[in-house]
Length: 146
Ligand code: FES
Image (cartoon, rainbow, N blue to C red; front, side, top):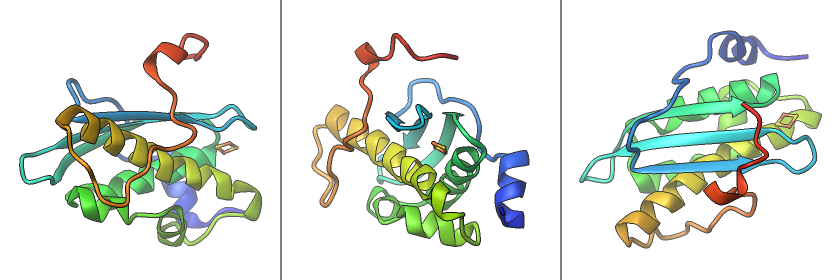
């Protein structure tokens, strides 16, 4: 059912953890399955993503897609990272079963949410970036389970 790459990123997820004082952090949730993904970005003055970490409270495909998404955005500029779509993440993982496509969307949205947070903090406008619909604000996180 899952490709070798999905299994690899599920069993050995890259860039798990958190970043202290991140340039941007985004948390998104899927209302249907209840899974949550949080993405931390460390962005330098040239708008390059120097470091990225994630935490996923979710299914195996969510872990694998967020892991792959971190690999794809690391070292990229903010503008390039914005172009990393859920499809790009799925392609890099050699595909996902149709019922798991929404998990990859969570990866894309969590990056967008973290970029949105960065742009807000810096007072920047990043062309083409919209606030993700499933963004969860800090004050709405009380029911989150760790
Ligand atoms: Fe919801 Fe995978 S089942 S993120």
